[in-house]
Length: 169
View 1 (tube, rainbow, N blue to C red):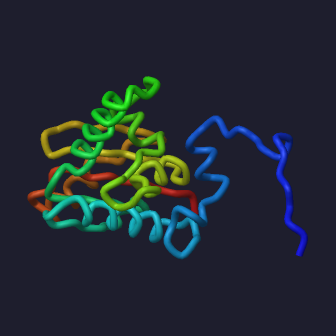
View 2: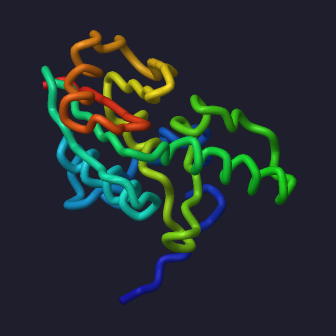
């Protein structure tokens, strides 16, 4: 078999982290398929790795919700911001919106692993996150009605963070 030689002309620069993910979803998702179940399982896998608190997946009126008794997003986002400062990397938005829109390394899990929240931003039509302290942030699409939070309160009364998303179809 003849070995292929790649040249500079064979390369293309992908500007957006979301574009990179969308170009090869099979390497980021379990079972190599983009659907609500796989996105939920991927995120829960991250949360379970980071937290000792209870974690739940709930479905409510087309929304898929991952909730936990610990705020895994804030802990992970703060670590990411600190690593970027320590490594003197170029400044990007390392706030909540940036965390959901960028490939955030997950070195605790492996050299080439990443946090799964960006997968929701890449593939879902609507993404929402909330904390028990009252923070509500709509990252994509529409804000779910208050019934979603009431459902979480009944199912996981000590929740601290939730991430909810919805896809077409």
